[in-house]
Image (cartoon, rainbow, N blue to C red; front, side, top):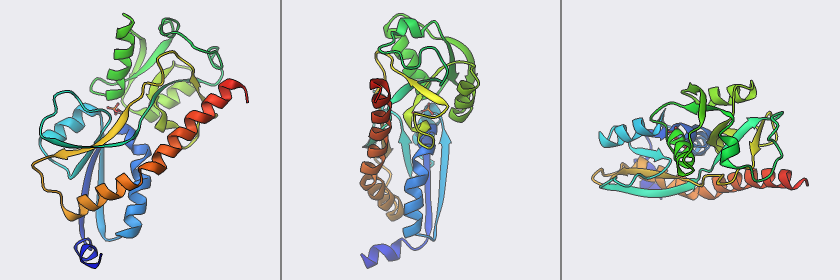
Length: 234
Ligand code: PGA
């Protein structure tokens, strides 16, 4: 609508997101920016704890988080695309191609783990804890990309968002392991404090992102299907 477009001429959209949104948010923002070229965009990427901190002090227009904690009051929540956590190993790892690997077996391997405050780390520890196990952490790293490089270098294996393989896919130097209890199925959520009245720009972006969800979902489904076809030996 013309009136909407007029209100959308200039301004700023400030997003804060968990780190794995780095693999998806730019493609949504790219299309958004083509439609509304004069809007300044910023995307602050940090771990789950830090994004929750920014949400509490309402520093940004919208937030993308990896899961919704039990006690999160007065927040408007829009479920967004799936964000499965998978087990990654270097392509030449002996467990690659094995079926139904147990957590007990996995617990014998060295792990590369994100820093405290990371939602990925929390979810990983929780799965191990349900089996009264703890992963053997060889190294802590503050970035998903650094973990991928460390996996490729043979420093260990890691649990990470499938989205972190969106550029190279599941058939590149990093392989997925078929582990019981994995993928951990999670979903992103776009949230904002309820009391915050969204700017026209923020509301337009939110609608836009929700419309774009099917595309993101299709990409994740395709990656999982490729992995499963690989396991079946097709
Ligand atoms: P993290 O969150 O950056 O805090 O690990 C990522 C995710 O939950 O997908």
